[in-house]
Length: 273
Ligand code: NAI
Ligand code: 15L
Image (tube, rainbow, N blue to C red; front, top):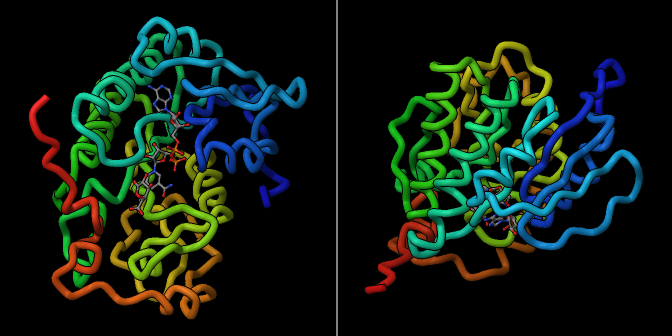
């Protein structure tokens, strides 16, 4: 899939490498780097060649993150808590963790971060609305709030230190769409790789926010403000419509059908701790 004219980077860091998308990117990013440094708090499969480095790291551990980032050209930051949880469980990985990543990037001269943000930063918009990256954020969860904070961190580190970021507001990136909502939010694994390729190679991105979604028949997100990335999705959820439509359609007042963030918009409260 990579264009033959693209020069591989010397060393790229991928956090969250043990996760669902991390495993996909571990394979699909191989052509883009001489060495891929793979990191997660969880165990990962051993290095398969001299082109892979494995470094376990808790994103909440500042010194460990600083050691992790040394010597890399760019960071693909996919690690962290990826679903709604009580705030205290999100704090270390997603709030402290994103600060540690940017501060380490500054100290070690890293020029660009690709940040796995989420549709849950705008999850309280209705499924009948179409928004672009300038729409005020409406986080639907503590998780969404942590991603919103990550986008602010990205903005600050560009304005203050010139470190570029592409914030990927990923919809639903799974092997196939799992429910009615995902017919609109689905991002295929191949389109994820296409998007990451453009985020790595597009010049002068500043802090760009782009919605990570395939070329589905209906979408809620307008990517014209990220046109300079030249992301061209090739896949569509239509191929899965028949199998998804076998599922009962949620009621019109069900958050799964009402809000862009779906069920995340109805999560919590988590009670007293
Ligand atoms: P995942 O939960 O499978 O992977 C996340 C990885 O982060 C896990 O392997 C986990 O061990 C690691 N992690 C958690 N806490 C950590 C810590 N303290 N230190 C180091 N690593 C830690 O999630 P998935 O689906 O692979 O998503 C990857 C990224 O993309 C996440 O940041 C998620 O929020 C974001 N995203 C994913 C979407 C999707 O549809 N898959 C949609 C929107 C955003
Ligand atoms: C996300 O941000 C989550 O990481 C993922 O597990 C899905 O829930 C996705 O959003 C979604 O909205 O479908």
